[in-house]
Every structure is written in C-alpha cells, then in structure tokens.
Length: 103
Image (tube, rainbow, N blue to C red; front, side):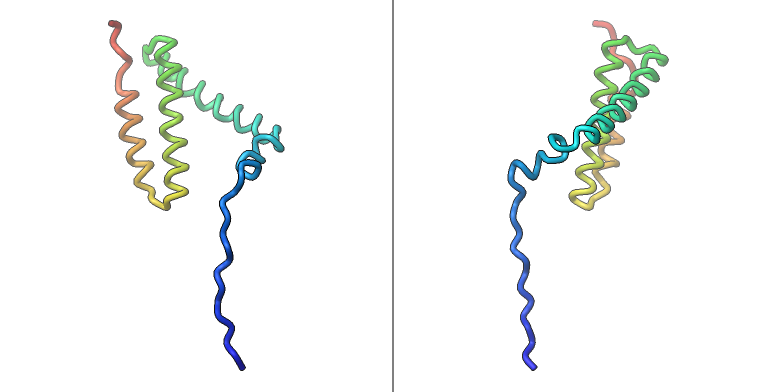
C-alpha cells in the first residue's frame, strides 16, 4: 500500500470583498459593536470627568485608552503574544495618570 504525501492546502489572502463582508453584510452586528464601544468609551470618559478632567480632554483620553486596549487585544490574539496587553496597560496608565494641565 502506497503512502499518500501530505499536500498543504493552498492559502489565499482574502480579497477586499471578504475583508469587508462583516461590516457591509451584517449591519446589525456592526451597530451592536458600535454601541458597545460607545458605551465603554462613555464610561471611561464619565470616570475621568468625575476625577476632574475637562470634558474635551476626558473624551479624547477615553477614546485613546479604548483604542490602546482594543488594539492590544487584536495584536495579542493575532500574534499569540499577551505582552501587547501589558504594554497597552502601561501606556493607558500613563495617559490616564492625571488630567492635562491647563496651558
């Protein structure tokens, strides 16, 4: 009996239609995800305002902090390296350490 050689499957990169399908063809999913991110950002901004941050600075810092966290989650998942989360944590702590001084 002859052994069959293992042939790796051909991999292809997703074309533009594949990459955008979830946002264009699943608008409800996109809307729910957007609401979740907006809520998280609002919660962070509210906490910053409660700690004395000006409205505009709180909103900007909340957006940046959420981007750091979500970007680190994506990088960690794709690379398999959890260190991205530790790096984002340090950066977020530095960003959120104190409200910006009025200049």
